Length: 464
Image 1 (cartoon, rainbow, N blue to C red):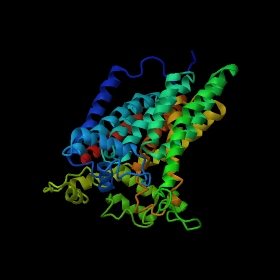
Image 2: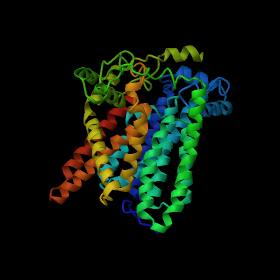
Image 3: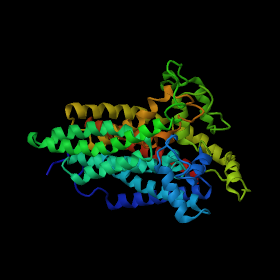
Image 4: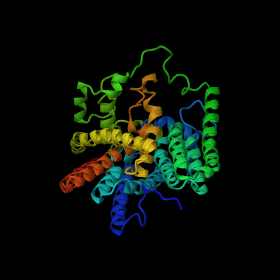
């Protein structure tokens, strides 16, 4: 049997771990249910998304920016549940899928982190961070990204330990194939998966036994790649918005420049008051930096999806959805969200530094076979960067990056969630360094746990 040096052997979760994770998972599920009760599925582009779901497949075409999977799924739910409660049932299905996906995330975190306090803190943070909770129920294709990403990460991790598992290759191929029909962004996973698993085959298989498994890997990735290419051709045939009107004409100046994307602005200080998307004019032309917009929309209910709806709601769905577009926050919710966006500056800083740190460490693993890096860390870092890249590298070429909301974390949800988790991975390594120089990491672990607990309580406070 091949040995996986980055994988813990034996039982993954202890009894105490299971009790904690069950409690956290149940609490996160309950917050999601409250969101559904507050019509939390009414988010950005809701009217259009609902219209195409109701008209699928006749009204849908490859001229849209999303593949058919999201619309097919909603149509399937509506046909089985009926017209009265299909939106609630659809949101509940999203919530269940995302809750199950979290358990895969928990397992990978347990393999990345060695200290119980940081494991618990990272799991709670990933469960309650607002942008993940909100977009686990909103009627959009984003609700599928974390489940599919988690499945791809799980099978990639298993293949990193044993590249000779046909079942894992089949699972990875099937997961990526499904992903291509729900979100084009999954194309970004193909290069890093090919790189990481190519290195695994080269290192962990004997010289004479590599060729068959290289062929298996090529075939496994060829299936989702073919599905992507076919859909790209159909999209081009449809003269689609995604292939034409979305992009700036050649030679046109960028609306969102690299300086807007990489550097903060003095105006970002206004984001510390936690403005919402509409009344705070977050979509204003170069009003704020990309980093500032990403931060505030990660740690607040920026579209007010989970805020209580107006007291009187029309029974007719179309005017009802228009009524729900602007929901006033209560004074208490606004206070909590203001504190949240300030309190979580530390987490955004950790995510940025931790991601860069893990990129360097994962690069050392790929180039020098660094045994100190956990396999799960390499997988999460590589896949997160892959998923993030198609959106991030396109921001300077998009016609309307601000008014279109391309800065919102929902477009790269699993990647941003992973970046926050990588901040905890860096802290875990810092604790290891402290132990090696004979200094106790206890105070740091306590501070990290307490700080995360306060953040989670803030999140639940304004989401529930």
